[in-house]
Length: 285
Image 1: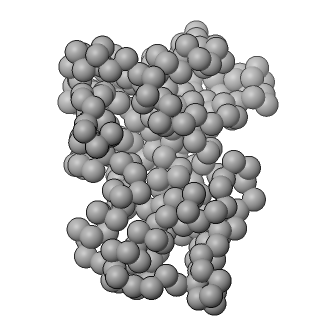
Image 2: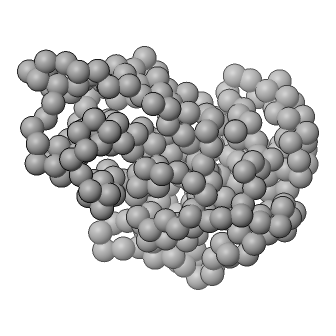
């Protein structure tokens, strides 16, 4: 089964919760590509759960990988014994890049297990997904969504374009989401009201110039301070016509919104030449 990826077209942090999570006011936008591919293979029960993946940076221990954790969470919620499974994971979404790759993988394993066993209600499946991480429930049924709470509340947003003229610049290094949230300026974020509804309205009208004004990421300042390459990428994108260039999620991927696909493609070609091999350039679909 193919997964999907996503970007946060806006990520406003409105509070820190007692459980350690942060309350968000965000707009998630999914892509069919880039995507990962996951298959499950039955194995002797005595072998437990194992993960096969040759991508660098992906932990293969089931207790450290969201795919393995998804099996544990599903079986716990269903009250069933752990099956013997081999999880084959083919990575294409950059690892720890703010595009939801790990969360999408975990959600996809939950969906595959539900297809196989049908042991959970929809509410139980959602709860199992949230136990894995705040973004995981979104990937059970990914579509443009207005996201609140810590990520567990996601309301589909109708009327958005099926495709946006976006370009992603993904540096070839990971960033921990915990680090990004731990180093944000919470007081400044909370003091600035989100404008997600205005962003949604502008996108519905295909008014990308106005939409760019409402795009936001409260996590990005700390990343720009720590990683000079991200500042270079942001400035490069803006200098070459991006209406907005900002970090997606907890980074380090930078998303850039353009007036049209032609402009995005032209900058993709330039960026590939100028920053290769330190950056992977992606025209998402």
